[in-house]
Length: 270
Figure 1 (cartoon, helix red, strand yellow):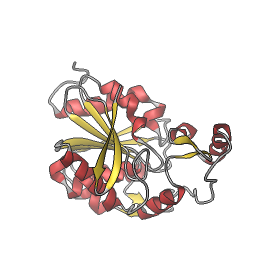
Figure 2 (cartoon, rainbow, N blue to C red):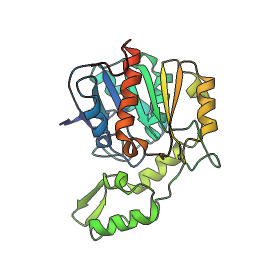
Figure 3 (cartoon, rainbow, N blue to C red):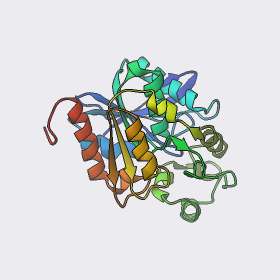
Figure 4 (cartoon, rainbow, N blue to C red):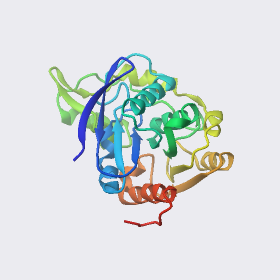
């Protein structure tokens, strides 16, 4: 079981999970509305081979909310985290918004990133290419019960379990660990074309795309691979944006294969 700890990063209290164990570190970064424990299946899959550490990014999970929610602020937190724990350079995996943070980190702090794994995140985070903002501005702040909260999610999001991971009971009812206003601010701050950032890093990279994704389109994924040396594309046919949850065994196997290849080992090595 992972251990949960807290650390101060750039003046805010942040939570993280450490799956411990031997082997090189893989830092995992969740997307908007997520939290570190979504990577528990991957941590278990890689146990004994890699040490997965997953950060609750600012305004998510058990980390402090509010403040600066620009990509630069997220990157500064991750850089401070790696330096505080004396971990770099490490492989960094990011899903969705976490993928953007990961490739921004690789570009601006190459000394901290040895390899890059981007899971279903585009560099063209703009309409009509994709849908960069889920409008939660009118969602209720509290619900009378967990069942009511779940019913609301069923009507508004394609992956209910992902959001339920951040559902919790407060004194005045059920709600989310994240603040709705924070999520709107953060999503809007990530709108843009980040092709130049993607192309300016040089670490070995694995780009994973869900074949049914609404975030990363296949033509864009192909261009991302063509424009950046040492980048491999793996497509999960039939999977959507949350492919790590839809095909957890294959996901874990692909991550392990890629990381093993960087260590000069064969696929499936023990």
